[in-house]
Amino acid sequence: MITYFLRYSMISIIKKDMLSQKTKIILGYVPSAVFPALISPVVFLDNSGSVTSFDDPKIIAILVALIVGIISKKIIGTILAGLISYWILIFLL
Image (cartoon, rainbow, N blue to C red; front, side):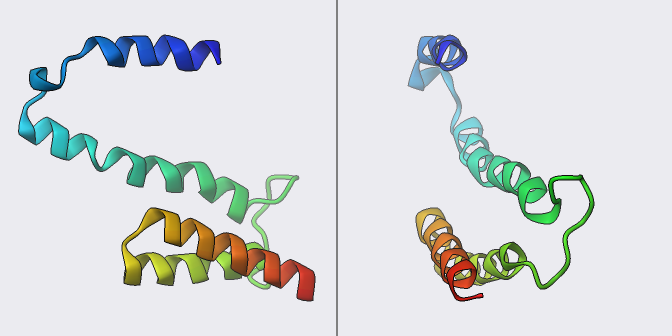
């Protein structure tokens, strides 16, 4: 929480009219770039740090999420599709 508030305080100082339109467009891509970087190690590596096999439910769920993301272009829909498909896979297998 402390880290969040420290970062937010610096961002809140910046006024919206201080950023150019190009900067706002570029910053719009940050969540789409950061989210896969946070999720990829969890999906592709196991607890020991080695690469997981392709029959792992996480790999199948991320492929479902990738397809839904390409079709819908919505982050929430992509996350929900990945989570629901993962839950279905782990409870059925």
